[in-house]
Image (cartoon, rainbow, N blue to C red; front, side, top):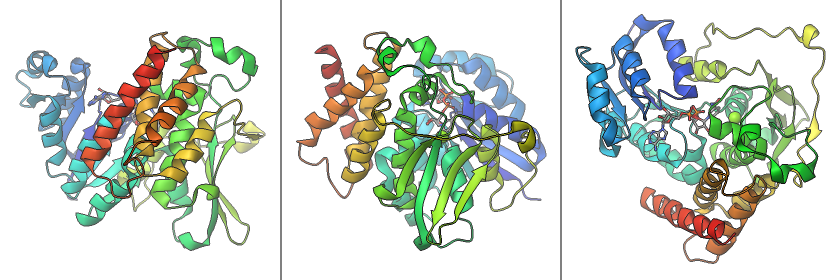
Length: 390
Ligand code: NAD
Ligand code: MG
């Protein structure tokens, strides 16, 4: 068996650690090229040494001495900073996991595509900010993108052997997050701690808060639009508190194909790791009789106005996704720092989109990395102004 060369961008995070869990179970099958992380250099160094990585990269230059010290004697190269991150992402690899959080994941993912790797895409922000650029870069370099977000993996799997032209609609499910049963009036006073507890999935803090606000689902609707090339009116969100069905694809003949599985990201990661094969994965097997029932509720756009904003962004396309995501990240920072309340996050994003949509170029059909990064920057500045103005 030939060793597969793998790189994990964002190896110290929730998705990164789940990816390492799968690789660790079969270490002889892989040669680890690069692992990247942030401030958690102890974890990064331990994993890189254990897996025999070529290089470990922290995105913070100030952490380089600590990373070097932690890697001393391991034979693993230490590197730091944005340039080193791009260099590591560009090293020849067969399979690259894109699991950095936020728009910071875009440039390293593009670098991996340019080197022709199969990109397992957990970083949904890449498709939201620059879907056409991601797809075009993959096409131009003979690379492939496989979705890792559980909903998109579910859609991808439901489409195997199907003709996309026969797809009528895609239904993306949402747990509803921490506040799905709260009275709407109470949401304004919700704290970051309350928002960061998820009923079903164990994930990073930011994405968990984004689940409570449905910004995560909003990003995923846009990601669905970009990834599968569907029209906005073909994409629906549905609240499904048990998180057992991850997505459904509806076909022209009325059939709905549902992907059912336990809420464990190792399924979607493992599917992308082994694709086009299916291999045994260490995920729980569902006992449906014991579970008894699955329930569904409408995704109420009054309770979760982020979903309404997602529709506007899906219609506008161009750089609207980059603005939406950057404003969301800024609003989330401000919420975590207790500068704004929970429901104010959507107001900040809506106001930022409004202020910037009047500007030239936001609806540019042809987008490149510079335009995306500049829209991201302008949106952050604008969102901070909106936040400061109260
Ligand atoms: P996380 O916060 O747990 O980990 C993020 C990783 O990115 C860490 O390794 C961190 O060091 C690194 N990182 C953070 N900022 C960086 C920067 N500026 N430059 C370079 N590296 C940086 O996040 P996560 O929950 O693992 O999510 C990662 C991505 O996967 C996100 O885009 C998220 O939306 C997506 N995703 C996550 C889940 C999940 O279950 N956690 C599910 C679906 C999709
Ligand atoms: Mg998801």
